Image 1 (spheres, rainbow, N blue to C red):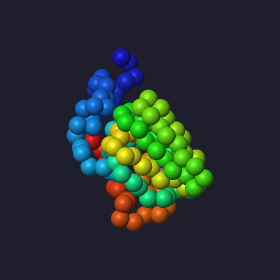
Image 2: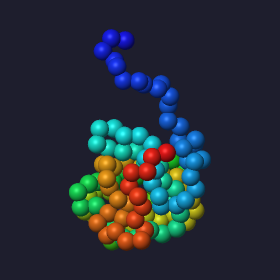
Image 3: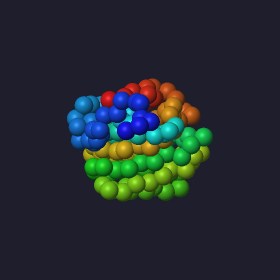
Length: 128
Ligand code: NI
């Protein structure tokens, strides 16, 4: 086609194939980028830490399992096929009794521990 110079591979990104490439929990993997936003797959099990993201909302889309996100004044249960947007600046703590497979959408450079940091911080730009 005229005007298109970049090499394009017409291959869809398959969530199951991507999830099969890693097993660790709480370590988001980037699978795609759209403008300044990244799509990340993450496996979640157990309890995370309280944190917030001062500059951005954070979208959780549950692909398999059930995710609970605790807030200081309540909690939301997100089932398979459901999503939730955590507003910026709001403290939250994800929790899953059994492993949950989640698609995260957030701007490039966002850390999983937000403004808190510490030992649970995962590398932020790991592609699979
Ligand atoms: Ni967060």
